[in-house]
Amino acid sequence: MINYFILFPLQVTAKDFNMDPTFTPKDLIIAGVILTVIIFVVIINSILKKKGPSGKGSGSGLFSGFALHKIARNIGLNNDQANMLSYVFKLDQVMDHEKSINNPALLDRHFRKAYRIIEHGSASEPENQRRLAVLFSTRNILENSVIGGISSTRQIRDDTPLTISSGKDKINVHVLSTKGDYLVVDSPRNVLGSQIKIQKGTKIPILFFNKSNKGFAFETRVMGYSTYNGHPSMQLAHSVHIKFLSQRRYRRRHSVIACSMYLVYVEGSGKKQRLVVDKRRLQGNIADISVGGCSIKIMAPVQVGARFKIEFIQGDVNVAALGQVLRSNRAGMNTVIHVKFIKIPQKSMNAVNAFVYEYGRE
Image (cartoon, rainbow, N blue to C red; front, side, top):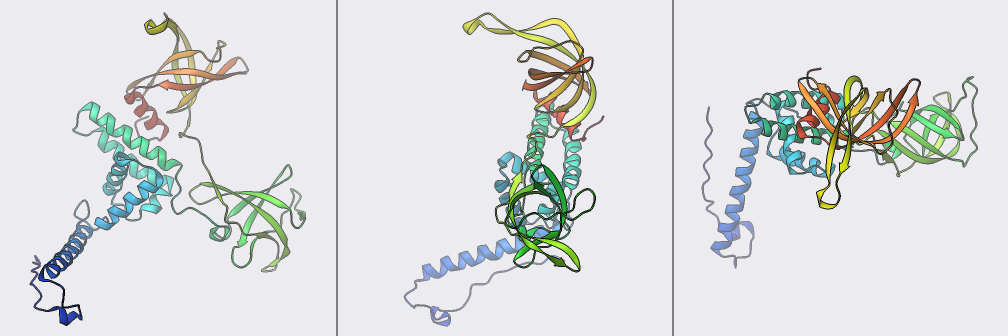
């Protein structure tokens, strides 16, 4: 059934609303227009909520879209990345944006679906590669984001594992309660199971991870000892100074990928300088890789600071990148070099990201 909404002009005067009769008809017209716009927005939002991106209920209404873009801005996404995130969530009809953003496995499921659709899209190859680059740049920023983060120890869930640093020792305890004046945890024990008494008033740093595997740290002070539900416990001061522990800039994946390396050197001087790729080839195996660089096992020693053109095959893509050796160390008969990518073409970058995030064909 189709519902038609007809707006009739209100047959009232200013006195009916206890308004100042000095209001002119023009003022009432403006008020009527504003009211009409508000009603129109509510109606459109209701329709969008019912239909969603695929004609089904998705909760992705007009206001939901505004909320997602606000989240995107807070994370630090630019307009292209915010639009990409919106596209990814609409494809999977995501209703709870924050839940997906804070769940790496769920987030990868959404992004993997979008990756495959874009990869086989009807747009030109350069446009598909551009969109994939935006997809991965968005995913990478989300990798180190925290939505609805923890700002106080009162927000830590009961039974959360904590790691206490006491001198050179790392002691694992669990949260018993965050209510009341203290953060109550298990009484610390050593490897033999004996109770450890950290002196009252001692400052101790604490590390913990939430359910999304995001790391946090804070400093507190031992306030005393007691029993909680019949178990020995330690009381710690609450803190509102919790730091998010950022992870690697780019996600990294262990691998065994055969690669070829060609020394790159500068020829000429001044404006006539150019990079020349040596024809001699070194063989190696990539041990781990990210879009920012890789570690390579080779037989020959390599000088730190040297530049190489690195080539390998990933899926059906011939990947090539210009890299510089940051450090080198011996590992038995091999040398392990750690390389930073200085320049990598967009298609190669997308192929590396697809491998690292396990979105593409292996």
